[in-house]
Length: 263
Image 1 (tube, rainbow, N blue to C red):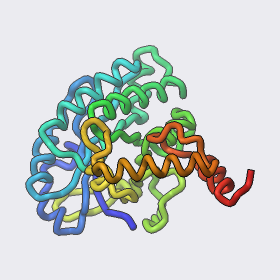
Image 2: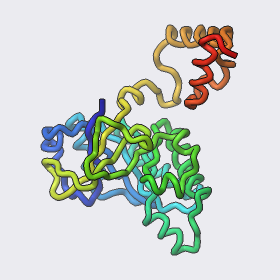
Image 3: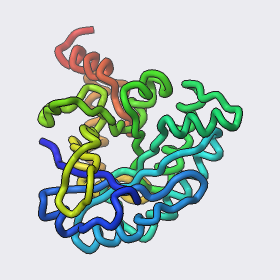
């Protein structure tokens, strides 16, 4: 199961969003801006039209940061731009070849350590604001510029454009969203547009979190979670620590192994 979406910026001009919706597009990722506070000229119109027509959307910010502090400021600009709207999809950190070139022209060599610190600074600021963070990257950047912990900490919006994308099969490197072509055609947009598939139900996930990231499912759910933690500790499946953290595959294997009575 997946939902079909697009991502747009000023390069798509004035989008006819009613035609886009009628063509079966279920969500959009809108460029909110780039660098130190530059708002995309089409962002306000795109966000307002998506809101009016009930098209769920998220945002992305094209980064020109080369220090973590710059990345945090970019995230703050992104949050400020998105503040008038209800985001039902993530706020993504977009760091690409132009980003690396920009840093290089200013005498900064972008290493894997630096790029990873930029992604964390941006995404942590996004998360602290109450929005849902994401990292946009192609396979080369995931390998060359981001350390292996980044996909474990944040959802990955994978940019990979095969000749014949099989949308029912989420790529291994995708972590929730896949940009599967840059040459799509959608009614209401002149020229090519990026097409995406979302494999997570982001509107439901985001609706289940309040602005502080706390449980909003009620006392019954909280009590059930506490009983569940007591049970797994008693069974020796888990030590019950870090209840809000994601688990790795290895940790799931160990828990299942213990559940079968193994030591």
